[in-house]
Amino acid sequence: MNKVITGSTSVYGIIGSPVSHSLSPVMQNAGFEAIKLDAIYVPWLVERNDLAEAVRGLRALSVSGFNVTIPHKSTIIKYLDEVSDEASVAGAVNTVVNRSGRLIGYNTDGAGLILSLERSLQFTPSGKNIVMLGAGGAARGAVAALSDAGASKISIVNRTLDKAVKIAQDMEAVFKEVLFAAADYEKLQAIIDSADIIINATPMGMNGDDFARLEIAEFKKHVKIYDMVYSTGMTSFHRFASGRGVEFANGLGMLAAQGELAFRLWTGALPPQSLFMETLLNIIKISKP
Ligand code: NAP
Image (cartoon, rainbow, N blue to C red; front, side, top):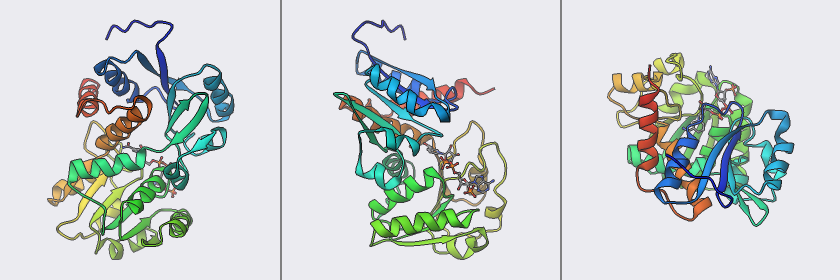
């Protein structure tokens, strides 16, 4: 890419810490190039304590929009002018649009997961029994999106039980039709017996480490496993699934889909089909040792 930057080039980016590993710049810039939009996307390292100042700066500089990643997805809400319904229920913002000086927060992570489940596993949440491993920011957004998409039951399993209970209680107040349960890993076997899908929203397995709790569990034959983690090697969930003939997908599709939806919020158009996924696969292949 030999992009010429002029005085009218729109500027987008991502704030977070760490941020240098982010694959979003390569995806979003490929998208801008493909639709011939005069825009660039850059990473900005913003430490936890610098968020307020950074948002003031982004406002003053009239950036067109930006993504938000760890550790700012929840704390940024108080610095924005408006937050969409889905971001408000999820309690997290990953995409900000600058509309004539007003900063509006959205969450495309949840919708990105739903799209990826459909594309990679032909899984639609409506009427399904879902087990969510983890109760952090990603799990909360995912539970909100899956509830909104019509899941019948969602069980949140977490090392720290209180955090799973809190998500279940918060969601119960919003999604009256969905049955929520919270548990720690001691109850895992009883819970997954009737699951249609198990979604990993913990960082476990990212470095090839084993998720020992999963090894003791028995699954229904048709269960599917979705791992929000993605890595160049095999995650422990991938190893587990392939050893048992269970259908599996990793979180690369979610990363691509949340990016596509952010791109649409900023530009009004989706990037060309599969462009983000192909770009990610190329980068990951290139960075392999
Ligand atoms: P987070 O807010 O820090 O939450 C982490 C969760 O994982 C917590 O529930 C934590 O349990 C649990 N956990 C951490 N280490 C564990 C261990 N050793 N054993 C069991 N549970 C453990 O992080 P997050 O933002 O939710 O992200 C979670 C994962 O999803 C990350 O790996 C992230 O990269 C991935 N993610 C992927 C995408 C994508 O697009 N594919 C998007 C978002 C996130 P406690 O509550 O007990 O600490």
